[in-house]
Image 1 (cartoon, rainbow, N blue to C red):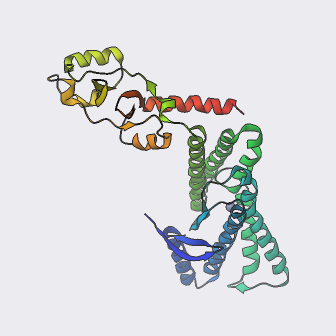
Image 2: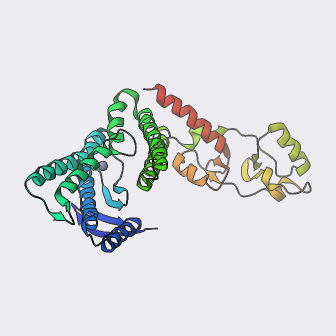
Image 3: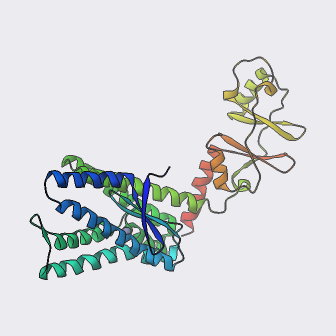
Length: 340
Ligand SMILES: [Zn+2]
């Protein structure tokens, strides 16, 4: 799904407008026409140009670190430069570059406006755009995710606390700030503040989740987190026997093994009557090999409660359940924290 329109390219980077941005623009222009004052429409467009320049600031420095920039996407609440992985050593400079651009533009325009300004409908355009750029720079320097200040804070903290913990600190500041903004927004009935608070909250949440999974699951394979030698079931076991078997072992799902090979899997949800044998109810197992990467396992687990690890001869090596993933995640997280 792509709800955006491509405008043009700057420094080889496509600039795209999101559909919500276009709707917002239409509303602003509509209101300007109704109020017979085009100041707000012009201001909005210049604000959009300012945001693009801000994002180009990030992109310019990012490119020097070899980061590929897919596009700059504009949303009503701001712009995002979509980059592939930002190198950790470049994060501080890349994060600062955007606000620095905004400050330079803001200060320059404020100085110019002291000598010369364009008045539209009684408002000074250059002065206002200058002020907005200063606000854009300052807002982005708030030390919380997903603002630039969050990245800067993480870059500074990570020297001492490690990347994961620093991300969590910056994300938690972001979330607390978002909640404060939300309460303030609701009390003052300020829709923009409410929208920004939601953007900040979910941005912080997303960043911290992504980094968490990426950091602690780096280079983890099936063999590292599987439970080896799982309890198996014979396909000829009757369902009555199987129910007692489940009661004894207390797992919800089991591999079905015949002549040393995995032929199916069966769990509590497969059984609808007490007639027949395991073979009648078992289903096709989701399999991976010992070297399957954790990200591929997680993709497979969207549709299955557990995956089975087999060798090239379909011999069962282990089992990975959602509980295994959660436990591994907690242990790896502790390990990563203690290493810093
Ligand atoms: Zn920025």
